[in-house]
Length: 288
Image (cartoon, rainbow, N blue to C red; front, top):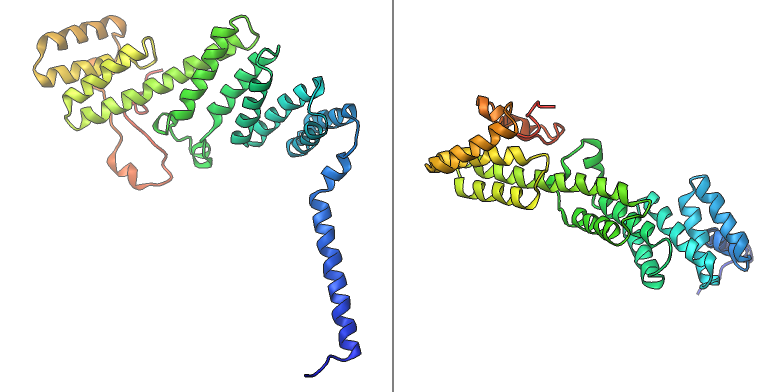
């Protein structure tokens, strides 16, 4: 067996020392913030987190508040740190973590004075979940996506308005609930139009009826009535078709369906363009 020369052993030893030192430096960098925060008084940790929040350093604030929560699990600073952590996670787009933090707060402090705010924040987070990059850039229709989290957001805002009707967040929550209901109603009218285009008259009428019963006074109620007119006419039910037409004429005499211009489906070739975004008969409706 050939043994390495003294010079070679020295070089290898030097490489080991350099690599070990570099690795330690990297590890130390990973835990730098945690090490800096260890043993710091709770007031100083909280003030540091506040400064990071003020400067938009959301990730730094989360690290600071986590250290605060670990070192000081009880007290008023802990309660506030949980709320600040949830907000910072929301701003970072870490929606799952934000929901987890909010739920932890609600379980631990169910009667806290800021409970209404946490339900409001939970609604905001759920409204923002499952919003993909392409949906933001090309403004893809949210009503065509999975509505599970928007429904949860509606539930959060509804809890806030029912339990804390006089809260400072209640008015905005009600407005957001209206917007969400319109989103849900749009989903239903899109499905009804899908059935209408494929001559599934009964299914179209059922979906339009469901929209009117479930989301009354939505932005799309007159469109649902128009679907009923079209579906009942094709089904040969002249009585129901006439009733629906009369309601539509009373509620929106300028509805384009009455002039034969609705639904105005998009050109099929548009689907071949991946950058064209999503269009439907609702989008082609030029009413203001």
